[in-house]
Image 1 (spheres, rainbow, N blue to C red):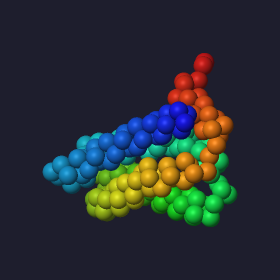
Image 2 (spheres, one colour):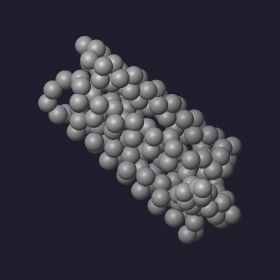
Image 3 (tube, rainbow, N blue to C red):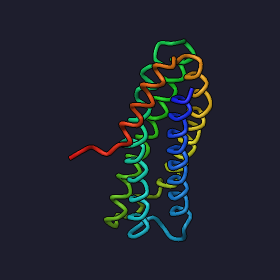
Image 4 (tube, rainbow, N blue to C red):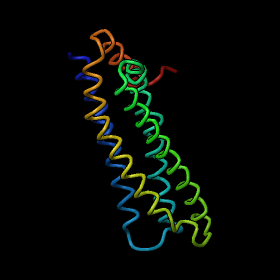
Length: 166
């Protein structure tokens, strides 16, 4: 099924981009110095880009896939629930990090001391999430989706990749 292969190729390419952004955040955190001033701003930029990419670019492409899978099988619904829970926790972690970094950029002492810990948790959860999508979600979608559904999914991904006409 060419539509399924095309859809997963796009989703996996975006997963690679998310992994790259996680690596960038790690590089900034690992750099010498405390998270204040320029380092806080640099990290805030990476975190903002990561969050924006995931929410505005990646997730919309998977929306129809997830919608079609809902209610297909108990194990699929349980997987979707776990993925949604992980996604929500990751969103909350990045929001908390962004708030701390704003305080650090303003020079508030000790405001970012938990940032490395929170980003480490976010990284771990995100990597688990991406792995589950690439393996378990991929398997469940292959089992439960028809050619017509895959065609609709591939079309929706294509539409999401096309910039809006102004």
